[in-house]
Image (tube, rainbow, N blue to C red):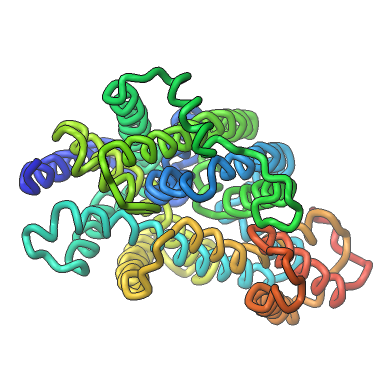
Amino acid sequence: MSASLLFSFVIGYFLLLLVVAYLTSRNSNNDSFFIGNRNSNWMLVAFGMIGTSLSGVTFISVPGAVGKESFAYFQIMLGYLIGYLVIAYVLLPLYYRLNLTSIYNYLSTRLGFASYKTGASFFILSRTLGATARLYLVVKILQDAILRNFEIPFWVTTLVILLMILLYTYEGGVKTIVWTDTLQTTCMLAGLIICVFYILKTMNISLGESWSMMEEKGYTRIFFTDPESRFFFLKQIAAGAFITITMTGMDQEMMQKNISVKTLKDAQKNVITLSLIMLAVILLFLVLGGLLHLYGAQVGVNATGDALFPAIALKHMPPIISVIFIIALISALFPSADGAITALTSSFCIDILGMQRRNDWTDIQKKKYRQRVHLIVAFIFLVFVLIFKWVNNPSMIGVILKIAGYTYGPLLGLFSFGILTKRTVNDRLVPLICILAPAICFILDKYQKVFFGSFEIGLELLIINGLLTFLGLWAVSKKDAPAVN
């Protein structure tokens, strides 16, 4: 299919998003932008959060990794289920009881103002790095598949995509994103299912037969029992649980949508529903990965990792499937990018600028500041995407999980300390503790062969980071604590 025709479908899809944004953002205010006026439908939020949770990295990297890692990623998903239960029955009741707009306000109430600022800062850092890494991967594919044919530079492609996102999030924020994410998740899942069935039909095999073929190649292995391996199932399940607790339950972007739901009960239904759907969707992505490797070997595709799915979809499938792939890819891109930009704007306005505490600002002034921050965040995204292009790592999902291990660890330690203990922390020392913990983890990770021999530290780096933060907070705390928890 020609690049021009593919590009026309991209433009048509974006125009559809603008229509949805226009219809949903009318009469919006700051509360609409930050928490959707706490009037979001839980079913829409649950469904739309699938797209936010998965992103373009899952769409590309999870299938691409099957060749080397088999179905090991499913071990992490089992941990996700545990994490979602903790979110639903521990964190959400806390957030709703305190009626939070920014979840990091809890840290201010429980630990102190410096702890609050530290938690918000780590979220801003982590979400900026993680979201721009996801954005880079999808922009790179769109650049290689379409826009390079028009001799459009990579930075222009990134800028245009960010401008698209700004256009439909600028006014409505969360109120709009709940609806656009629903549309985009539908397109992404439809693309996933269609690609699976196309490969099965083209290879003239059933799903059961394909499973047997994948099993022969070793692709369907789920559980790894070597304790020293980074894929050891207990490490992966534990890491999956803590990744979910931190990257969803302690992440303003994800919780911003949850706390936009009317009641706690509906928010809990949202999280449990999301966890069950995610389990099925990730399994389907892994099956697609196995099928892509089988089909790629049959048609002589040499691409591996992140390059496998795009190479097959754009060069070895009919034009209509190529269109479906591109639309599904964009649909995987936008929910993670639009939500991140909106959440970062919200967190900076509320947590850093203290917008809710500024009684001397009118609503019009607050809106102007919020819109300026929104533009600045988008510019920062542009800069970081260009940095990732310069680094050019072959597997972005590994990069994202590594970033999470370093930056979400302090959040895990802060929230765990606040919830699990009744101690009062020396608030002034909290920023230092939260910087030292990732620094120690970096040394442990870099020289792990020196310290641990053949034992490999994998995703459990997040747990180690959180534990170090927790222990550091304990060391600078005393018994008498405030009653709030």
